[in-house]
Image (cartoon, rainbow, N blue to C red; front, side, top):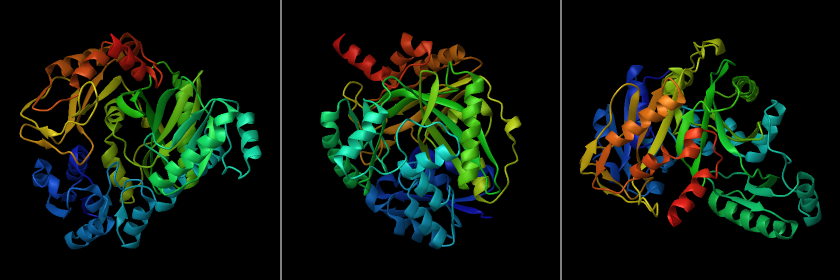
Length: 450
């Protein structure tokens, strides 16, 4: 048990965790960089400590500084949020070694699921459907590598075993380019992730990106909380998310969801997590597990009525889940738009001062944000400054509600992608539901020449 949580993150997720802690009667310690010294959410924390200069490597990624802040503040637990150190097995191990609670899975689970090859092996053992391809390291000889690719069938994709965030991937359409693609991806993986291991699997041409949210405790109980569709992406970065994934039979989602929950039981997983799948030709294919809270968790909260962050804190305290799978009922439809400070055409980050700030309101409209009038969007961090989430009785109802909310919302002083989201909500392909992961980039390319 713990009564004080240090939040090792910033921005909207730091505020979201603060609110969840307050709801459970927990004290909060906020850490911040010099660039975030004026962030309004710091005033809501019970204690706020500066941990370094603006550069993430000297502040939010500085493990020693965060651990020292926990020591001097008396915090007994550290919540990493998402990004930064949230999926760093080494940091989780250091937190545990310091006698503190890491609000997330064990370092061992993070390590297993962070290695895409090991994760695939674990998922196959649990009966989770995987993308065709071996769940072991590639052999060293070119002939043996070519034999694996031939058996899978071209096109194949070369992936970094320790990769993520859309990096460390190359599609190979013919045997002649396979070995060069492996060499380039290995070097990129070594530089970006400190792990040069790569693997090969079947490249799916027109898949959707569908997720299953899970929640597990330390007593062997695990639940799945419905599905999400995150197919609207640009350069492998999500732009719009929704729950549930439209057009997929409920029974099919349930079958995969139960396999995901079983996988959690088998590997001793504790906390929240997300199983990510490619969905093509009416079939699910596991690609990776995110061992942390997701940016898009609010759409699942809106459809299930479950405070996922509070549940995450409860199981971290050693509590048993009070919910059973039969209690999980997904109602209606939710949509989330990620709002970024960026040029609406080039998508280049556009930091600066927010001068005008008008939020939408009304039934089932939610804005998760740390920003407001007078807030400066920093050039040092991700450009997302808000998430706009709506819930409706049906998907059509949610789309109408999102259109109204986007029309009401006003942000002045900086360039934003609000106009882009307004256009997306009127795109016939998206409104029909079930677009693939390439849809948005095709749509943007067509818009550029229109």
